[in-house]
Length: 386
Image (cartoon, rainbow, N blue to C red; front, side, top):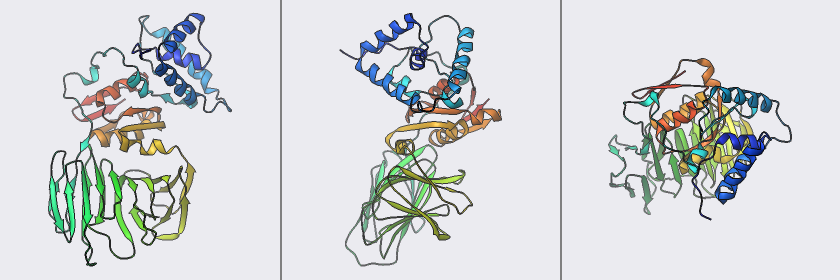
């Protein structure tokens, strides 16, 4: 049977998971589930999310239902095909994936965004700064072909690739790749290491590697797939932290305006240590993450879902119980907007869900506003949150 695009009231799904459905609602949900395997798969994934802590149920579920019930009495009786409701552990479930899988009729333009230009997602763009100070714009569609010290440098506007020829070791020549807010870019270093740079990030690296180590310096966020070389370790310095690897895949988030540096290992093994105190270190295995608070000399480690921290390079944002202030900081870098909170309490509202990285910004705000917990006003590229 072909997949149906008939929307479902999200509240029915929520009530089913928490055993709150009436007989009439049960029949309606059964009909929707029988229409498509995609519907059933979606419901199963949603159910898994809600029941992941079923072994230790939270009393917040009952509180959440009471809050939803009060809101229902305040709503008009007409059908609303999209609802965002208060969820487990006092966090708000911001289920962007429901919008993606089950589109509803196009909503009226929110009042907050009327009569102004759309805020669009970021694009592939970067500035390449050479050792001699020369600069090259690598925006989408731009082409570049250079030869520096026996290394070919090529770009088609979405990435830049370094290819080293066989030459004698000479004094290292460094380049810097700067990705602005509202941008992203890919880089292949001369040893074959691949790097995905996120918005508002900078990487300084040699045009070609020589000597006993491969060393780069990162500010911001990047995902690395390091080319294996057992004889020459790869080292990354970022905000007082050094990572040493032989060949592996991992993500580093180390923005100057964040309170800590997070290193998330996807595969392989890495050693993380405080640059000024190499004796303060830890080793990461796949699925683990190290946290180094800025200005401190203490590394903590815990197990995580790596997709939450790496999905950005694959075109998605994934948020799990994340405070709105942190979520908006992430979105602001990608959409290149300024965010201002007028209500301090709004900063700590927590959201869970995922969203396509290329969705228009106004649609994201519209979905968040559906929680009735927060409101937005857009003034040019300035977002005021109440």
